[in-house]
Every structure is written in C-alpha cells, then in structure tokens.
Length: 144
Image (tube, rainbow, N blue to C red; front, top):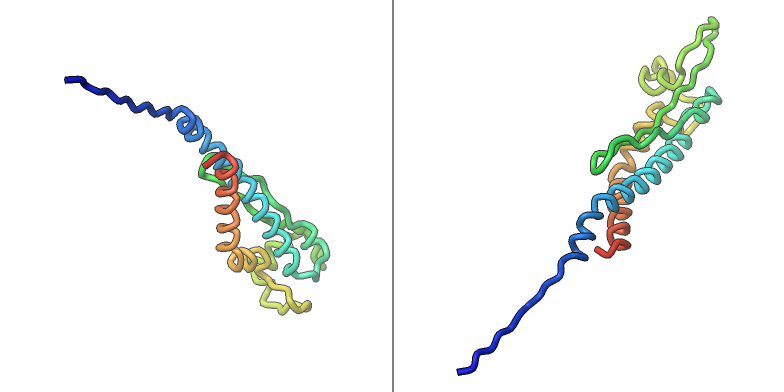
C-alpha cells in the first residue's frame, strides 16, 4: 500500500519582525498624537484666558512630553509674573486660575478663570480619540 505525506510550512518571521517593532510604532504615533492634542489645548486655553493682563495669553506654553513606551505625559501651563500696585511681583496666571482672582468677575466675555482646566475637560475625550486614531494610522502604515 502506497503512503502519501503532506507537509505544511509556516514562516512567521515577517510577523515576528512586525511584532517586535510594534511598540516603537505605537510610541512614535502616540507622541505625534499627543503633540497635536497639546497644541490644540494651548490654542483653546489662549482663546479663553482672561486678557486683563496682556502677558497671560503669551505665557501659555506646551511642556515636553515625558515618559516612554505606553507611559507618556504632557502638559500645558502658564506663568505670567506681573507687578502688583504695591510693586511686588506675583504670578497672575496662578492667581487667576487657582486662587479665583479674589472672586473678581472677568471683564471680557468668553473668558474663564480656569483657562487651562476648562478646555481640558471639554476636549479630553476627543483628544484621547485623536491619539488612538494616530496610533491606528501608525500601525496601519506598518502593515498591521
């Protein structure tokens, strides 16, 4: 009786190579997405920041993205140091954002005291989705 033999060969080297590089692709794409989100956050914060002190909007800045891999963090901050009537220097950005500016009302419509927090709360889910989309685009470009 004649016997037949069949073989099946599977080469997973391309998949293994893609798998090895996936972490780099994800981190790079996440950084790109985070840069975009931080830039949008800054622009939104500038738009709603009080303008009583002209330096406040100019001092809103994007910080560095820190961390590596899947643990990345970034921030937007403001540090507007001005002189008070008594001649002392103080951080107006902190005063308006954190100390509620002595309960004073803002003179300019459309501005808010919590100029960093309000845009973040409003857009956090959108920015998260944007970063996830950037990661997906990066993975798609790498063949996933």
